[in-house]
Length: 165
Ligand SMILES: [Zn+2]
Ligand SMILES: [Zn+2]
Image 1 (cartoon, rainbow, N blue to C red):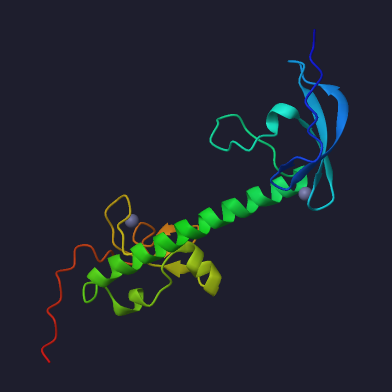
Image 2: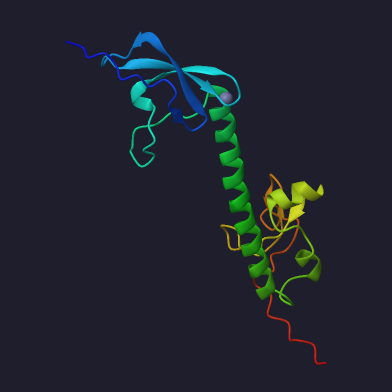
């Protein structure tokens, strides 16, 4: 005998509030519920996806499809942002070590590909070597400038002596 589903109307899961029962059943016989999102959209959600237990492995639903998608995009941006910050900080550290070893103008270049794009420039210098061991600026979309023969690699330059002050 299928048991009648627990009445979940009024329960809140993230942005969703259960507003009414649905006729639909999952293959396993679970009831679907109509939920209203804080944005006003409604979404039909199987009862087993409405959970407050975020630690469990099964995916949960806690927003309408539009809001869930938006949040996903934001999540990706936040992650990319964090990675980009790390990349720039790393490039800054690498470049600190290279003062006097590479042309000063390289140290004035943007730090990363994204940084160059932000500034409307085409070259950047992360202070790292390319796969062939060159130490040279990179061109956005183009790779190492020493590889493309546009700049000699600084990798083999002897360290310049610090100027006596
Ligand atoms: Zn929504
Ligand atoms: Zn190279």
